[in-house]
Length: 260
Image (cartoon, rainbow, N blue to C red):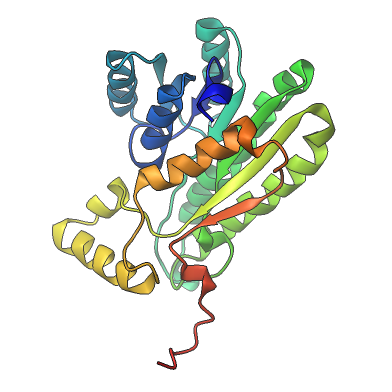
């Protein structure tokens, strides 16, 4: 994997923390030049600076994935700074919890704009470049919440399901042009989102989700990042249109009570 990622150029969105930051660091560690894009310019700067301090190549940009001009500016930054673009990781997502009948139209539009439309824009604007050069890899962050439903997360479920099928369609359309498109479907991951719940609620989140996963714990961002890097590398050269589940076994459960 290391050899096949060396000298590549990547964009990672929502790379200021969590899965995105872990992915940016891991790609850089394999020799990929990384554009660290995040809604928080400060967090993007911090991740990029840490990569550079460790001997890697990175540049940061403040980016809202739902704004076409910012997506285009991020791609242009990759071209201007590093001279190309080989890998795009569309990682940004947003969840707002509420029963379906209580979801406001504004909340629905926000979740769809960031999680689904942001992924669409990230692919829309990089694909012409990748098609011209006859190669490229796109990895989208979906979720097990795109495979099955969660109580109180219907907008997020709809958006992530959309990411999965958008990935499949893009893979079909672009395979003959040397472009692979896949997505990862994480289970519960120990990210900044848990911390935003507050200390007590974050601990409760980790405890309840650890119990739900057969492996007995929630995942770590690096465990998703390693899968993203595999999909971005030539080691996965025959994989496209796939939704790779990385969930500690939670979707292996039928939901029926254990017999033992």
